Image (tube, rainbow, N blue to C red; front, side, top):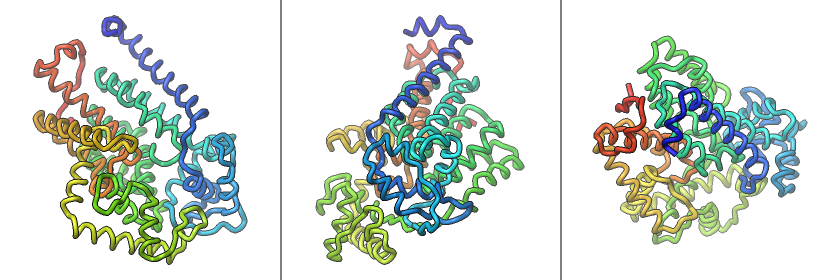
Length: 434
């Protein structure tokens, strides 16, 4: 295969890369039509309804009747076609951040012939194609990275799954995308920098776990760009906070409590939302109903449930602090590997953690401190209390691709990998590139 690729001249090679990108785009569209696993309408319906009733700078408001009707469909094809509309008296719903509703609103206007769900997926597939095309066509990015990008990211089953997924996980990719561009280019064109920073700012309003990696990116912007351009760039990043940042009733301690169940523990907690709800029933004697319209969304109940999970979490932390440290270490090591795959047995997770440890040792040996910082920045707000499941660390897969490229490149320079000597035009893989 290498001899075939080597014989292709640059124009044909670019056409071949473009062909791969287009074939992936068609593939994703096909998968999006015939997909089987989606996020439950109980969690997506309120977002679609909020997008249909969105007022610029307004709160998260929904039409309950349409959400109930949407939930009764119980069929992906019918859900894709369902169009939420405005209602006369929408109700205030403070359990979700409103930022994601703006993205669905934009998708439904760009693809007005589809329902909100299908429009969202079409927008994600289209943007993924654009991002891949930018990487594959940029002459500043070396060929070796492009091949890693194709086989480890573009056609990665986890990446494809969340690109076609009807929830906000896909949108975590944007900070990593700009970081990749900055790694190979000293400055970025304004038509990349400003729109994507606006999107990143909007994403941070509903996925605050990205704040560390976004901070690293903004530091990179100020380091590389002229001061005036950097200030304008950060203005684009902050702009969404003026209209899309609204405090919500998200219960952090529910996530932290359930996260204990990722590994064996003396309390018998499992990595399931139901274990958190069972805790409340055990303590208060009240069964929680997390279905839309259930008692879980009552202001008094959600505040009380937050208090119950908080007290239980800190009580367990005080009782077994070493267990929490062990979990955080395992979560971090898994972040340097494939992440925490819920379908795998525990023994394989320990094997993957060992693989992550080897990855860290190799990065330290090669003095790739910037890569370590990027990976920690993309997962650092999660791994202290929750396992790095692919949905939560989606942007990390692009950074892991960059990490593998840097490792192969450095070992190539040291003459340790004769096969990769055949690749020409490799960019120098410095710490932070610059």
